[in-house]
Each structure stands twice: as C-alpha cells, then as structure tokens.
Amino acid sequence: MVVLIFSIFGAEKIPMQDVHLLQKNSPDILVYAVPVMLILTLAEFVSSHIHDHPNYETKETIGSILTGAGSLIINLVMKFVLFYGAVLVYNQLPWRIEFHWWTLIPCFIVYDFCSYWAHRIAHYSRFFWATHVVHHSAEHYNLTVSFRISWIQHLKIIFFLPLIVFGFHPLIFFISNQLGVLYQFWVHTESIGKLHPFIEKYFGTPSNHRVHHGSDEKYLDKNFGATFMIWDHLFGSFQYEEEKPTYGLTTNLDQKINPFVLNFHEYSDMLKDVRSAPTFRRKLYFIFASPGKIHEYKSKK
Image 1 (cartoon, rainbow, N blue to C red):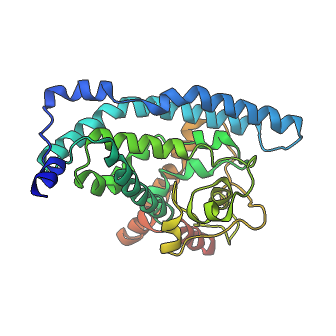
Image 2: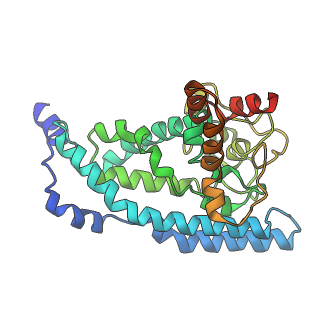
C-alpha cells in the first residue's frame, strides 16, 4: 500500500528548463476542434435560415466571431505563462501526482466543481461579472455564443488554485480545462430540445444552459454547472427549462459588433461609478457587490 501511494504521489519535479518542451507537446485540443466547431456552426446557421428560425442576427454574430478570435489568440499567448506557473506550484508540493491517464477523471470532476464556483461567484461579484458579462450579452442563442469567451477570463484562475494545489500533473490540469471548455460548445443551441430526464437532471445540456442565459427573473442566476449539474442540485441553483427564456442582459447593449466594447464595457461603467461614489465604502461596493444589487441601488437614485 505504501509503495502504491508513493507511486501515485511521489512524482519527480519537472525541470524548469523542460517546461517549454512539455508545453509544446501538450495537445491544443481547442485549436484542433475549431474546424469542427465552425462547420457545425455554419450548418446551424444554414438550417436556421432554411427553417425560418431567427436565432442568428448579423451584427451579433460578427461580434461573437471577433470576440472568439481574440480569445483564441490570448489563450495561446497565456498558455505558456499559466503552464509555467502551474509547474512552479507543482514542484513545491510534496504530494505531486504522477502523470497517469486515469488521473484525468478525478481532476476533471474537481475542475468542474471549481468551475461551478468560479461561474457562480462571477454572477454575484461585479468585479468577476465583468470577466463574464460578454458571454451573456447575446440576445440570440446559437453556437456562436460559445465563442464569447472573455479576453480577461484568466483573472478567474484564482478559483482553480485548489485544483493545482491538489497535486495533479500540469498536463492533466490543462487537458481537463480544455475538455471542460470544449464540452460547453454544444450546449449553446436551440437546435437540440430536451434530452432524457436523467441526462437533464445531472448533466449540462442545451436546455439547462438556455435557462442560464435567460434574463427572466425565474431564470436569473441558475444552472451554473458546466458538465455536471449535480453542483446546482447540491447548492440550490438548479432550474428546469419551462417557457422559452428571454436571452441577453437585463439591460442590453446598443453595441453589437465592437469586441472591445463587448469585453470591457462593464469595467468602464464600474470606473465611472467608483469615481462618482461619495465614500470609500461605496467605491468598494461598486466594485465587488452583486450586479443585481448595484442595479437596484442605481435605479432608486
């Protein structure tokens, strides 16, 4: 038993001079998946026009594509930085886990749990909401919405530090991350209705995620789970899809194309609020309070 435990948790440190080789050899799953994602998106776009289902809007689609292209470039640049940091932490741990394919399973489950809380907190703290709002700004629900990944989403890496501290091999961690992001592509569609009740209850599905993108009061801040919905059941944030959601923000943007506005408008508004706040406490409120409560406060003034 001792030998088995040591064989799992007794991994050698990764030489820092080898990090670039390890990073270079790690699979860019999302990059490989881009052609398939584009083909499926094009198929959905054509189908929506053939069947006169108006779930695509030209300006909004362009905005999604530009945001997605920028996000892909930023992710490629940040990959080395984050990989280097993950290796630094990994080497300091006395319980480093060896690279085994099966460790991907527990790592992915823990990753999804961290993702749930990162997602939930992003809805209840304006500072982190600003890293996520671009994803909710589309008023039409289609596969291009999955391209709306914030250019500053890496600020949320803090919520995944427990996963790194668990001692999973950096390659396993980054593969889990890419699989998690890739899984969320297919749930951004109206082309798939409700699936088997068991799947709808315990897994992320298009129906469950349509609820999450709804701006209706009953749908607000529901279904934060990415791959597994069990977290929403455990922490009281689950909601089945009933009537069709109204997509978009509670206050929608006039700008539909400019990816800089889509990505940074909330920080711009936050800065204006902070500058006009009369006290230091109110300034902190405008930065970290719930977006919903801030909206209520400003509407009463």
